[in-house]
Amino acid sequence: MKKVKLSVLLAAVVIMAGLSSCLKTDENTNVIGTAVLHPNAGGWFEDEDGGKYIPEGVTVKDDSDLAVLTMQYDYTKINTQSNSVNITILGDVDYLDTMSVKRTTTDVEGMVTCRLYNEQESGGMGGVWGTNDYLILPVQYYVTKEEYATRNEEDIEENLIKKNHKFTVYYDINDILMSKTALNLRLCYDVDNIILPEHASFRDVYTVRCQEPLYISLEDLFDKIDESGMSIDYTSMTTVNVTYDSTVGDIPTQLPNYSSDVSKKVITYSLRSFK
Image (tube, rainbow, N blue to C red; front, top):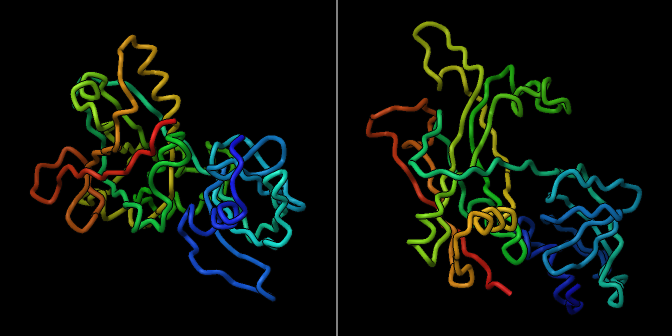
């Protein structure tokens, strides 16, 4: 595990995720911040440099690779030997959902438009996490009022948002070979069980806006590419380009739709230096 300096461990909560850039102090020792961390089955959360955040009275689930949590801790209690600190979690822990990753050799299309936020718009929630371990995509999409009412259901059959709304990331190995310095990906958004009243459009029924960060494992993606037998120099890659379908004003629209309002957009995130 990489050992980090005290100042780096302290700053990880506030700077790493960028969601909470202010410090609240109580006698200049208590810090409150929000971060994207990796849940560890050992009962703690880890930051991108291996720092441990050990929660008090909270069970850490390890069925997701990433989680968003708001925490408080006393920075004078940081253990520099074990690179850890005890924390109090404020509110609920949001365990992020993953997206499917599939290979393609053709230009694929989704069923509905969506929107992606860049790193600044998402408050630091979007982009590459770790040493190119994960790619977090902050997505905006729309659901029905009936679907939104089931958002807290844990059973996927009962949670209609998770059941009906699916995001898939596609990659084309030949395109990656040609680009050399960029990892080009395609995001497609599909919606199942669409039922529209007569003369109603998608945007008339899907009116509740949802925003959430979803992720894929870049390590798994690179492994899939390697398993294909292709020789790719990942160390020369500097960016991730994600193409997706969107509309003017980010109004949800079923595809295909050939109006001038619908277009392909590209959002770019920076890759970290490969170690």
